[in-house]
Image (cartoon, rainbow, N blue to C red; front, top):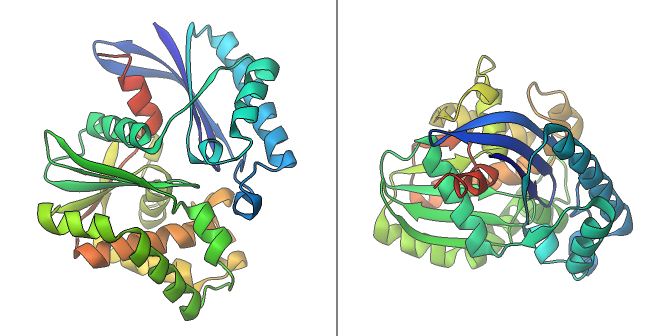
Length: 301
């Protein structure tokens, strides 16, 4: 069975076309587009017209690709950017009529479940861990051990939302960093409390920013060829400091940092720093298998 998975993120739309053979995914085609559906979304909680149009245009192109590869089954899921927007349902309707793609809006729990399934499929969970998926609109946290999902929650603290709310200075100054920390203290109190009970031993980053961190630390790393890997803790700390001290122009010149993440990587680093510090974690791993792989996994059982 040939399957097409579409992940409509707040910043990026992903398309994955694959077949399942002997419980293993055979990736036939994979792409993503920096749609930035959540551009200025925090101002009126709306997908603005230009972003709305970019999203539909991207889905029309995805539909042509899906038809070209003959994928009989299409599963499209929309996350924070669509589910939190007042005109999110209008976007879903337009996608159906103008692009021929039916979209399911998933809630934070479903999103976390898919992320966990994808990350677990990668084989990266070897001890009690906290999985972290930094999206544009939301960030999901999943507590797990090698067998079970223990606890999960989605928070509206994605990199784009943090950037729109707090990224006022560039390079970001101490005052703005402290404002972010205050916001995270309020938002993540329950996460910190439950982690103190279950004591995860490592942080696992799900794709996205964590792939950028890994690639920027190790230029020889072929992210596309692996399902998981380690991120050296000290090297990460040095990189995070470099990112937060740099301005936009300086970050734009950094190797292996894609244009879409030039600014949001600062928010991702500050959010990751906060979690590492609060939970006293010294071990970081990453999984290239994320939500869309979790969706694919649901077809292989």
